Length: 402
Image 1: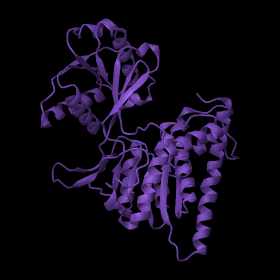
Image 2: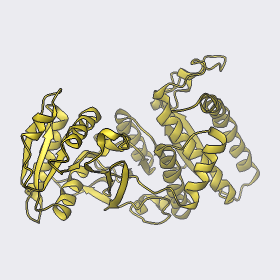
Image 3: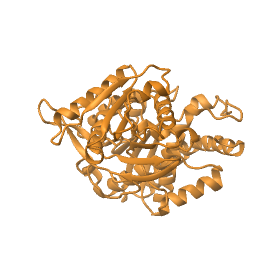
Image 4: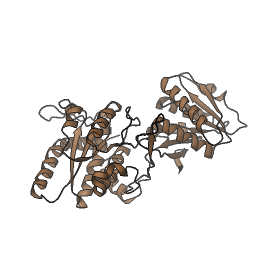
């Protein structure tokens, strides 16, 4: 939770964003005008900053000393991008960066895309699902590589070789979970606890499809539907204390996941099961006493121990300037900008042919693979297929597997 000092500091940061977006672009234009022999690479960053919602026409902050949660994610991603820009400035790198607030009430996304600088070489976005298709279409028309840094959906994009999705789709995540279970828990009894819902049915269909297409031994999955207000006895009657059991939370609902974890933890002395969760569990704190006694595993596409030099510098910056700890989204913005800006500098107009490159690792290893259209086997887009699986027990991380 942010302290009052950190809230005020963050509000001041938002005010600086308005100035930064204006002054930084003008500064780079001035430098370009002075050096006709140096061509700067141009990057556009689309991020939900909600500046028009946070400030009135006189640039007065609307929320007094509070800080609404809906602003957090975009601002944190922007802060990471800004830190990456600062780092590259220290390297003497020549870049021109445009920052677009996708939640602007005065400029539509279509107008923002139309105002892209000529010869923009890269688009990085922290997009909503309904923005991906629009950005992707503009990127393809202009032959600009488009990096979706955060959303786990492709927005219906197909036949677009300029689009890269770094957060795997739900289908890809379930396929990774399936292979992980095959590797580490092939002999366990496997029970998928789920709630009723369309997304839960989708998860089941992906598990079933993974079973049909696997080249290894097919897993035997038992599906159990639970009511919204289920209790420990509703879970325990599905368990057998004489068998090794892997339970899977077959829902993206964090509330369902936390309740299931709590119930299984309360039963752990009699039924020592292992619980596999979803990627949404990365937002849950498993240090609470109610989760003790059970081993918890979930996959995430972005994980690092924060012990490397860049992470320490970022953490110290937030500690001394923001009076807070940097979130995962700060590191995401920093990592994506640093990695793909360096690739742009190296490959320039050929960047689209290097989207699978493993160069310029910052924090995470990515496994970028082409996604093919099943009907005609042509390229639809590129996707990161890598998940890291975190293992927790009694409030501590036990390890990371891939």
